[in-house]
Image (tube, rainbow, N blue to C red):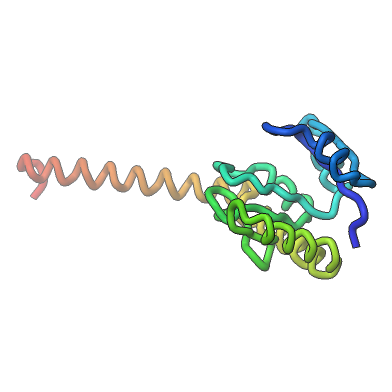
Length: 165
């Protein structure tokens, strides 16, 4: 079972230190912001990444954590809903559902085997769906589709003007 928490980054609203004091939480480490080159080391020190933002447009932090083999907990909305496979690479919870978030956190904290299984799948998903090779294939396919559409539009226009028979 997880017995400590590390909080990285910054956000809007109440500073985490105030919440930690209010709750009298123990074994919490505020890691703060880290430069990009330190992310793998910082992420690999953890067991899980939790990003409960309800307005996360993409979720690069999720992919970075998944690439390090961490399962993730995120809101089932916007970018995270496209990145995280619920029950496979992590847990998706309904936006603003504190009970669902608490349940997912409890499950992740108390089931190390499940956390490791989802973390392994998260690493595979990050590599296969978001690695440079996968992105290059997607971009090449997009270029091919745009060129084919452009040629199709050009040919259609020429035929309408009597240029092609």
